[in-house]
Image 1 (cartoon, rainbow, N blue to C red):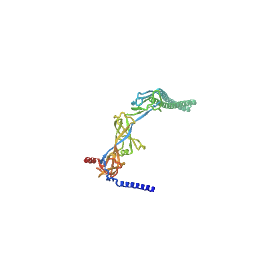
Image 2 (tube, rainbow, N blue to C red):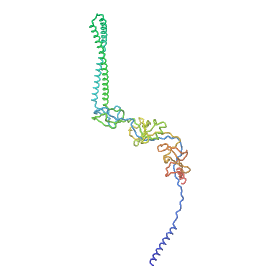
Image 3 (tube, rainbow, N blue to C red):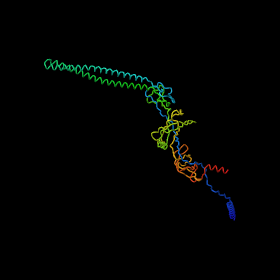
Image 4 (cartoon, rainbow, N blue to C red):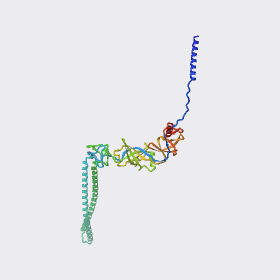
Length: 423
């Protein structure tokens, strides 16, 4: 009996709770449905106007010296003197003394070489004198040989007649042969003396070469600046013994400098196929702190081969002298500006107008329409494009998230007008 009462009570409570829930659900307020309104984007537009454009190539690079040189002594010895500007950063003129090496051994070598020349010349002069003397005597030898032969022939004729004895004939024959041998021996002596004179002439030449070499070595005891410039990487001082293997300094020509900058394959190809790179004007911009120094230059030459790592080529542009870049040094970072080729029938647009590198959008009857384009060049923050565009098209330059054809849009100027009208 007690259990039935408890079950009845639970059933009543559940019935009341269910009735309350259904009554609340039936009387809940219903929210009014708002109509779906398409969003309209406010965009900036640029009227398309095709024409001729010559953009500027803006490149980066560095300053390099038109020439530099490592300074090494060409002779060996201890340093006995250095120039007043022989120090890092020292400015020198062509011919200024940098380092002087002890010249004693080279002066002695020069004196010895001069003595060898004098000795060889004296020996040759003596031999030539002997040759002249022998040539003078050989005429007498020939005359004597002729007389001896005549006497011998006469005696032979007289011997046949019985006038002259055989002994007298033999004596004249011997006298003739002796005279003839004397003449032949003197001629051989002249030949030997001539050969000796030739050897002595060669000795004179060798000695004179020694003199020239000694003079050159003596001149190299003073290392001078090969051209105007600034010194770096100084190594050496008084008392240090140096040899041709020692690098004493490096000199950089800071008066004749060049800009070395990188040009991509595409940029180089455009210029190379339309008149070439050499001779094009360029402006070099050196940003020195808060100031920017602009200098005029001319593209002169390119590296001998393309740089596979960077995908382009390095171009040299000598900077014209007597400009305001006196403090410029090799290694400084610079920018270069040079005219690109001329494009006809193209449009210059902001970078924000191009999507994905090959798409733009135009405003057509309040909707965005996609057009395919080709980017030909970049000019600072602008792009030079060509493609499916016509004069008068309203090109959208505003970046819209998830931009696509068909989006509703209106120009910003018309939005301002509508806002003023409603106010």
